[in-house]
Every structure is written in structure tokens, then in C-alpha cells.
Image (cartoon, rainbow, N blue to C red; front, side):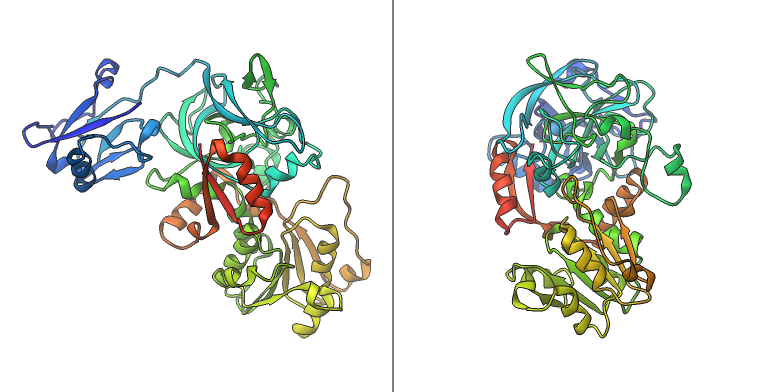
Length: 469
């Protein structure tokens, strides 16, 4: 839907109404809404705060519109801020309960380019939410599954798990979100009822894992996606490389509607994983020495988290020395390229740190590097956290004496964050400028350019590529 706005100094909207006024959907089809000038600057269109200058400029240009990547089809109505009820438009319900046909990037087989298709997205069933995805980012996990190395990788499927959007409709029994809410789909569910959620010891959730692991929805063990009658598997319970997706209600985090979706979409995976590995899993203390293996998005988020925790030395380890300059902006204080040393990298780090680092983080997914990350830790208390995901069938190894003498080997998923409870808190941290997001975004493309995004990801210069869906 396209909204056209004109400013009028003559029209009047009462601010004294005791209840919000909902207009009929027939009026919603009208092309022009008149707003008094004094109200325009306080009117919030979805997540966009509209001011008088924006509107006036549009009118002067003769368009009288506020589209052009600002609202477009994301418009779900507006509410008047500033302490009064004002005028509200009821979100259109024309698609609710119906199949939606939209564009999506389908992975038909491993190691093949994705295909942009017209995909049918069924309405949400009980306990499900249909979300209009507006922005989705690219993560190495998507490339990992497309490579065919993922034991849970199923084809054909719709990949994508780092995104943000707006709730289009909800299924029976869903009370935690409603149409119009701004949300981040989360591959790590949080039902708050299962054994895992109640334990207080983990952020893992077992409620829907049996369905998301095999690419279907829990309610009927079927997919909500199809192309010309052929079912398309879900991916990680999110499938965000689609203009619309259906997720379980326990896998969607409601966030601050003022947050820019083109930025906070990154909080669906990589950035929280790195920050949480430091804050939740390792619990790095001030003054600690830290080593980070792999300086991609997750590794840089580890560096950012370590800096915030007060680590005194943050050593970045990567075979691409070009990454050091950028890594310094995230908190890395020293850089080591294993290719420039004859000794094993673990020995290099032990020598640099008078016996080893206090904490190490493996952010690559390479089992030999996982061993090096453990063995560079200090005897007696060093802790190594496995963050990267290794290929199917890979095993880790070390001498038992490494653990007997006090080193600790740990793993982390989504940085230990509980998705529905804590992702909104991370959004607020970003809004308060307490964590970075913008700095991780190196490229911006569209859904139609998704295969180019894969190329960029493997090129070494791309941290995160955000796709406008």
C-alpha cells in the first residue's frame, strides 16, 4: 500500500477524543490524508518519525508522497504521538488468513546459485506468526548450508536467519505479538516452558527443535512455503530470504518500533553471538588477556564485547593481515598472522602472554584451530570458547592433560542470549549507542542480487551484506 500525505493548515484533527478513532478500510484506500501542520512533526509512520521538512519537501517536488524506501509497502498505519490519541488507521487485513504470493530466493540444491521465485506462503496456524521481512543480512551459516556440509541442510529450502520485519498476521492462540509489531525472527527459540528454558542454565530451548531441525512447522509437520505446488523446506525456523515467512511464536522477538530495521536485523545472529560469547559464556573480567581466532563479524563482535568488559589485551588472530586495521576499531589491540611464524600459533600466543591467555574464542569453525585456541590458554584457569560451527562429522582433539591442568573448553550458541527476552534489550543497547551495528555493515544489496552477496561474503572484504527484501 502506498500512502500519500498532504499538509493542510485548515483541516483539524481533534486531540480531545477519549478513544482512538479507527477509519473504515474503504477510507484506507483513499490516496490523500490531510494532516494539520502542527501535528505532522509528531506523527509516527510505522517506525519512521515524520517531520515537517520531509513532508514539505515531498510536496514541493510535486509528489506529495512519503514512499521512496521510507514507507513503501511497509506502512501499517500511523499513530499520533505527543500524549494525545489523535487519528489512527487500522492496519489493512486483506492478506490475513490468505495465501500470500511473494518473491523469495530458493536454494534448490547444494553449491548452486539461488533462484528468485514466486513463492506461496500459507497463513499462520496455531502458535505461528507470519512476518513481512523487510531487511535480511547474510551470515556464513547460510553459505555453510548451501555448501552441502550441513548435516541438517535440506533442499529445496529458503535460507536466511538474520533479519527484521513487521508482523503481518498471527495464528490462533498467539498473544505475544500482533499485526504491526516490529520483530526479529530468532533461530534460537525461547518458549519459557520447557526443561531447558526453566533450568536457568542455558539459552537453548527444546520446544520446537524437532520440527525446525527437519525444515517444517511443529503444528502439522509441514512447510508453509511452496512453489507451483511443491513444498519448500524452512531453514533454522526462520527462512528470511523471502518477502514473507512463517515462524513459531516462540521464535520471534518484539522490538522497539523506533529501531531502524535495516540495522537491527544483524541482531538475529552474528553480533549477539560474539558479544554473548564474552559476556554470557566466558564472563570475561576486566584486565583479562583475550585471543580471538577469526576476525569476521563474529570475531569482531567478540572483540567489541571484550573491550566493553575491560580486557587489557585483545589479540586478533587471522591469516589475512588486511583485517587488522578494521579490527582495531572494534577493540583489537594486537594482531598475529600464523603464516608469519614458524612455531605453532598456540606457542606464539603462550610466549606473548607469559604462559597463555585468560580467554580464547574460536570464531572460524576449524577443528584444528579449536585445538590451538584451547592450548594457547593459561594453565590453571584459561577458558576457550568454541563459537564457530565445524563441518559435519568433524571431531575435536587435544591431550587430556590440557584439561586436567585446569583449562576449560566451552561452547556457545547465539552467545547464550535468550532470544525473546534479551534480543529486545540488545536493540535498546544499540539505540542507546552502547553497542555497534552500523560498523559491521559493509555492503547493501537487494534480494534480486542475493547471489552477488554470496560472492562478497567469500571475498574477504565483506562483514555483513544487508539485503533489502
